Image (cartoon, rainbow, N blue to C red; front, side, top):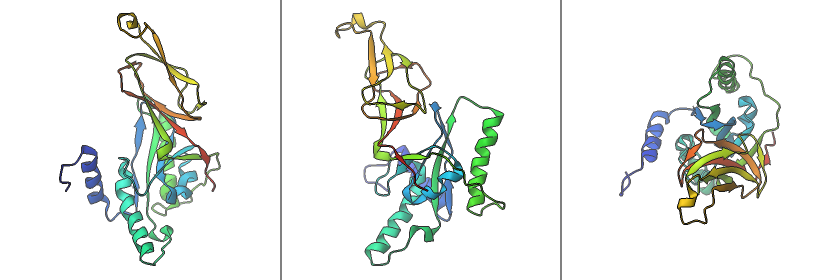
Length: 235
């Protein structure tokens, strides 16, 4: 219980902990507005990435809560591992046999039978890999990349208007490149030099992972997320 109250996200995290305290693995299945397939997990779980066969991974951090629900499940175990290590008992995390993932399975507004079958197979393949289901698991070969969560950048609209995208999920972006333009048809009525177009410019090199579906935005609205400081996953 927090002395000043808890946010809705913190309450959900507490519920997840109550529901999953005796679980071995947690999968929090998600979709987004328009998104490339990607995965949230911890560095300790990277060996499983080829079994999900998702190209992009954002690494969560053991010592900070970003609001992702699988953190609520695995972070206490990571802290327990660290407490054992501080007491002189260094236990490899693999010995805990625990894992948590948030697979982000593409676009929320697009549904096909083929995608449904493929996505279901990703989950089943992982469960076979862990021995939850019988049968052989396929370890896919691919160019999997990752970035730390602190380098996963969320861009926000600096003004309201109509949004025109020049980059899309899965596209590489370069620092200084215009990812989108906000069209402002009534700018001449405001005291801002009458600029009718305002660019959203990439600050760093990276990969666009998602952007909003709506083309109508208001100031401060989150519009896209970009992986930066991207590194290959060595498996």
